[in-house]
Length: 221
Length: 221
Image (cartoon, rainbow over all chains, first blue to last red):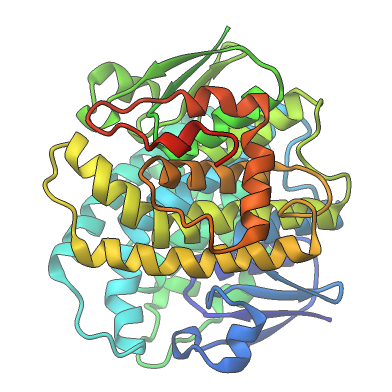
């Protein structure tokens, strides 16, 4: 069976969980306290990061390459478009969320509010929280602008780009940091993706000391 | 013609230049003072980063997606292996260099020593330079270990992973931050890749105020 070493609010782990769920794969989830850098964990991934996936007898790391691997191994349902231009746009948006959005928003909000407490690194830095709260507005507007022209973020079909974005937004929603009233397109898009069976495991997540708000798992939020 | 907006020592721009060179594409290079965030530049790429590629009538951003796009558009010579496992390994190593190596080594050395002066952000932080100088040793050892088992970094053929690594190492070599005596495998690998025609444009780079050391462009370094 596929086994994923993960951390519940990590957007990179969530993206892999969503992609495996969408491909109807059963996955054994093992929560990894990656910041403790246990010898056994470092042996699996010298980079000391999650996600780490055990699949096809191999140990795979890095969420981007992992998702492309899953997409190439399990063809249906396809999460990449059939054209070169379409695949470029998906990859560009995956990077947008996993690099730019992560740096400007997720790291400033989720890591400051939750990870720092879990890992014993101290108190949230209020200037970072302020920067994250400001940046997410601009990103929600950008998503809304894309969705004015497209059914899904990268085009007319559901792709890896939507799961990358949804992974970040769902982690932020767990700590009530998404203003769903800001953009109607984004709200509708999130309602659509949130209702997919792949999302169930993520909506059931519980981080000790950080109970999710009632609307987090509500499909009619 | 293909046009690339770039910055000479950026490893992400160098990777794209190397891949285009290996595919025998003529490229018009336009140096971009991206840190000045000119209106025209931000219109091309709202993320305010280089590289930005104009190709096939489109504006492309993000070096990873750009390289996959070039690879899919221009099939020969192939820089991705024919197997799913092979492609995963290439993508994993590209991320290794563009994320981990960049964060631990390139950002600590090239950005501290060169970019800060160019952009007027002040003096190098000596603790970062020390951290970078320490981390590169571990990375050279890791590359040496890979090359003990493989002709090229990701396997027996030259791939995007080699160009990602060579892009970082060539930027570091420009400021004499690579100890080529540390690992014989790495030195041989770099000599092989450095002698490819694709490397010529990079070896001719000149950054005002930072003359390269004599060995930088020497194929027999």
